[in-house]
Image 1 (tube, rainbow, N blue to C red):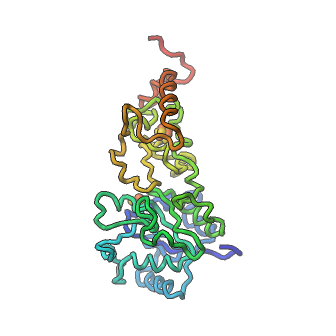
Image 2 (image 1 turned 180 degrees about the vertical axis):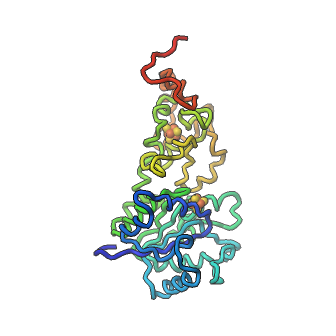
Image 3 (image 1 turned 60 degrees about the vertical axis):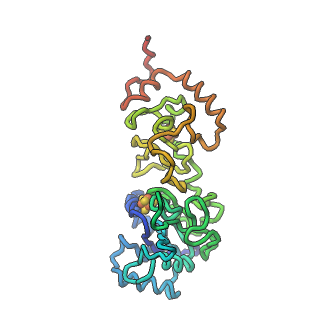
Length: 336
Ligand code: SF4
Ligand code: SF4
C-alpha cells in the first residue's frame, strides 16, 4: 500500500491448533493492537479476537466475495483440509454450509496479499503428519512440493505468491513485520526466499546467537537436555540448518528453544513434523551426525570436529555436561 492508505486484514483459522494466534498475542514491543494501528492496519475480523459475532462475520465474507468490500490482506492460520476425497467437508465453515477450502480459494482470489501464518498454513505442518487422514496441505505447498490448495501458479492481485510466515508457532514479529512491510508496499518477490518465506527472518540460522555456540565450536556436547553443552551431537538440534532468527530476535523478549534447553526442530521448514527419527535424538552414521550445517562439506566437519574435540578446554568440557556453570573462566585446569 502507498500514499498513506491503510491496509485492511481478514484472519481465518483453519486446520491448526490456534497456537499461532496465541503467539501473536505475545507481541510486546509494542502490543498487538498498537502495532497494527501504528502500521496502518485495520483488522476486519479475527475469529478469536473480534467482538463481532458469526452473523456479522458472514456478511463481511459475502461482501468481500461479491466485491462490495475490498480485501487487502488475507491471513490464514492452520492447514487446509481437502478431505474427504477433495470435498473439504471435514472442515465446514460454521453457518455457511460450505467447506473452508472453498472460502479460502474465493477470498485468496480477490485478496491483494495472501499470508500463510505458521507452518500448517504454509506447508501442511503437524496437521499433515502421519497418514494425513484429512488430506491437509498448505496454501501453496503440499509439504516441500509447490501446489497446495491454491496451486503453484497462484498470485495474489499484487502479483505475489502466498507469503509463508512459517514456524510452529510463528514468531509474532515475523507476522507483524511482514504485515507492516506489506502495508507500506515494501515487500516484494525479492524479499522472499525460495520457499516464499520472508527473508527478513530466514536469512539467518537459529544457530546464530545461540548461547551454546562456544560448546558447539569445541564439540562439547550435552547428554541431557538440562546440560549446558551443544544439543547437536546427541539431542537432535537442527539449529545449524534451521532458517530462522530465533536466537537473535528471541522470543518473549529473551527466550528461544535452545536457550530453554530444547533442541531446535527446524519448525520453519516443510515436513519438519516428520524427521524420520525422535525429535530429541541425533541420527548418526559411524558417529557422524546425518544433518550437518547447511553449507559445510562433510569432510571439513569431520576434520574440524576431531581437532576441536582434541583441543577442548577443561572448563568447556566440564560445563557441557552440567546444568549450571561448574568450571569458571580463568580457573586453571585441574591436574589429573
Ligand atoms: S503452525 Fe504450529 S502453532 Fe501454528 S496452528 Fe499449526 S500446529 Fe498450531
Ligand atoms: S544447541 Fe543447536 S543452535 Fe545452539 S550451538 Fe548447538 S547446534 Fe547451534
